[in-house]
Image (cartoon, rainbow, N blue to C red; front, top):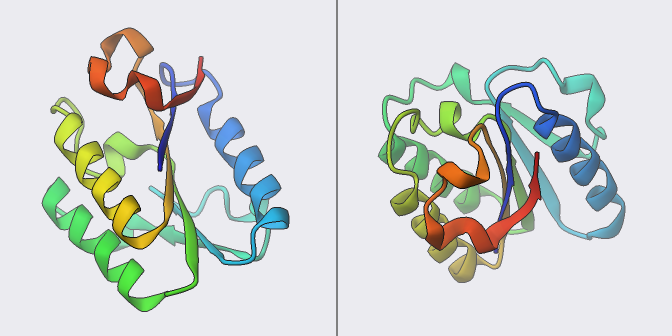
Length: 139
């Protein structure tokens, strides 16, 4: 399942994402990975959550990002959830159509039984109609 937390920059999406991941870590038995553009939120995350600073890996486009995700999945068979903060930035999708990437994440989710929760710096009205049903928080 792919879930979206959407809203303009500075509206509080990261706080919602952090609250969700810290609540979920108490409930699930598998592993959780949190991808971000820096390690800024390291101390706000439960220590059972693996934080990955995507900026450390020289990704140039969203295809490389999807390969990066597949690599993480291949190394952790207990992975249940992945959280993507600043999704447009870390996935190299700023100013691009996000629909194909979200559709690929949905297929990966179905194949590997993993949930993806994405923080996207766009208003709900700017999103493709096909992904609006995935929104869990709109700010």
